[in-house]
Image (cartoon, rainbow, N blue to C red; front, side, top):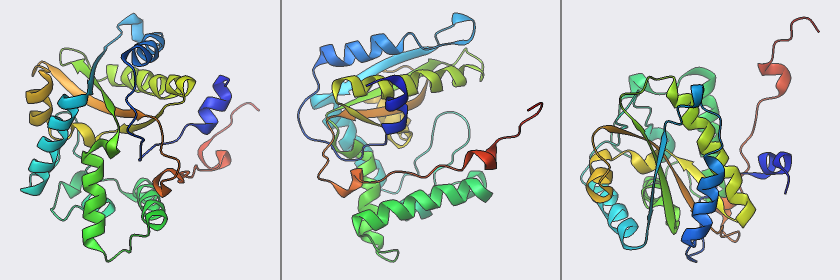
Amino acid sequence: MDIIEAINTRKSIRAYKQDPVPKAVIEDILQIATRSPSSMNTQPWEFVVVAGEALERLTKANLERLAVGEIPARDWGRNVWSDSATGLQKGSAQSDAFTGVYRERQVSLAVQIFQKLGIAREDREKRAEWTRQGFRYFGAPAVIIITMDKSLSPASFFDIGLVTQTIALAALKHGLGTCIQGQGVMYPKAVREITGIPESKYLIICLTIGYPDWSSPANAINSEREPLEKITTWLGY
């Protein structure tokens, strides 16, 4: 698979087979990802890979917090959690939620997901169960958490985005799927307790990783993209 094919075929995988991913395979993916560009070669990324019993404990901790109504929140930046799109019945920082066309795109994806899964708009329990699936990391056998030192400036978040996409693309080399997932690190205290990640590090994002279960309707979703002419301004052409 060449790089263009990888970019065009990569998608978010939200259902996985239970086959474990060998450590050597994830090592290869992360080694490739370290070649991602970074501002002035700062390489701000650090990785924590969670699988097996540790992942089971992390999943349990997430679900316990969700069950008692603790609102998911990042430990950096704005809280953009949206209960209306995911089915979580507790309120959140709606003033920080997406608005305008960005909200429209978010809702469009949520509608697509619920339609594929046969979840009716008014079925709150099934919507809430889908939210729980996200906090179970969609059943993936491994999760890659990407952290960044708090001493770094916000400009380094751009570099984290670069390495995140590189991981997602490199995973295709091994027949693996990923889902780039903020939800998985939205209970920071639980993540830190189980992984040992210190308070000096931001929990930026995580990727679920595993072999896709193509029989699941959750993996039949292809999110839409805006036409190029709508988002591009040409000068001098």
